[in-house]
Image (cartoon, rainbow, N blue to C red; front, top):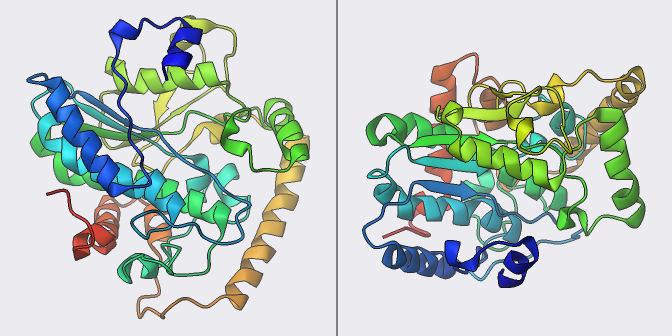
Length: 350
């Protein structure tokens, strides 16, 4: 971190670096303890849950030191634990905000989430209900798929934002929101993809879908949600209209392509849906959609969950319709909350 600060010209006296290994609950507890000691009487006013891993090429699950599937623990469970440790202190801060970085891949009612296999789907949360310990690698209780583990973890983050808003915002004043900053196609996130994918995927996102966003602009968007007074609203999923605005610097925040709230976390319109797609892309997406549909049908016929639930509905479907039925959204979030490992005594913040 010191090397990055030196390269980017940051004054090391203006911030303090603290290490946290999200692959370990003990490390998260240690980080929170050190943070509470370091800040003294000053309350925490911003918490951004941004860290994530994406391992689509893994043929089998990797396990954290706590015995959970690695992607889900790093991207979601450890963030949830950190929030549970810090939320009480944040209630004393002015304009406190918790921002969770989600993904368009966690929404199956979007191009990026519904048209690219595998699709995020928590089903009846059988994996969580069974304790989500080795050898149970997926939240839905099915077999491990690396790309789906990432998408499911992002869906969990956005659902958690929704649940925390409904349960704590009114009493604490903390704003809970999630954000999709756009497709940052040229980062190490895709380092495990094939060479041809890393070469042509940014080109595809830039010139066909228009969803490409550079690292600098994505950082501006995240900063805006964390500090802009217009983004103080709780219980929303933030996105941007108008596509990327590379090369315009800080002026990009005030000109075309304004931020817009997409309703409940994980629902409503997202950045990709706000772009005028070319006829070529529409044709490509149609082919992709039908291919994904047949692949998904084949996967459903082949796989069997750990145990069959008596409830036919899926969390994903209720969550997808959250904008149209607030009661359904809250009830679904409650079901999701109660199924997590921490509610069964596997891990607690105390």
